Image 1 (cartoon, rainbow, N blue to C red):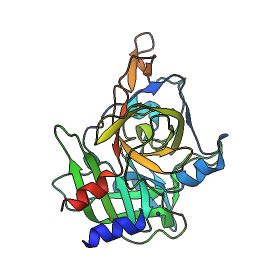
Image 2: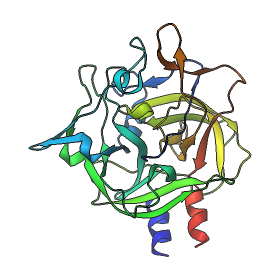
Image 3: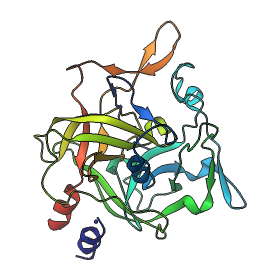
Image 4: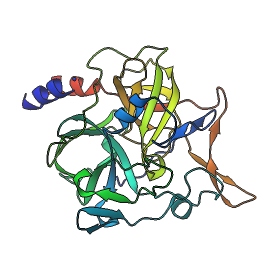
Length: 288
């Protein structure tokens, strides 16, 4: 009952990363690029899950020690973001001053805590000159306890987790979420998270593709591995409708260059990225 109260009043892996895909043009943007200001505000409430051993601490700063996208994933040198660090293992977002939502498969099921991993806010590029490797220590948080973790191995394919942080986040607002009902079929979507472990990216122009399943909906989102846990938001209402959990392949081999390029879906070619409905949290707690 305590958990129910917390959720209802505050919502105002290191495992294999499921692959994703790009629909139409690649709409992913860094935060310094042109976009509505509300997207940046929403992005401030998102966080990246990073292995603690990839951080070097010096005074009041942490420095990411991880390979860039080209080196770590063999992405072709002329693709977007190849010089940026690929450090995050999953994505998440703030729903209360000390509560983070992410995908259930982002957490190791044999651990009762998040292990040697940190949640980092503002892992992002705010200017084209930034590298994304320097993180103020005040933006780094740890998992105090896992309040809820569900990862179904088969239907209904529920996939979500709720984590209490080690302290409250006081310099940004949590994201409002849908408590009940379902997303409108014609909703415009934006997804905010860490595709391929990169600094925060905003991917707009998403649309609902299949709204029939009670546990998740399918959408045309420019999603990649490690986007798991990313907030999927209705652009018009500002409500989080769900979190990215599954998709099709994200990269394909360029045989001439022997490197990877994003996989682009043509009309009707892909079935859509799968988004766990955020309202499932309330359903799960009412069943306990």
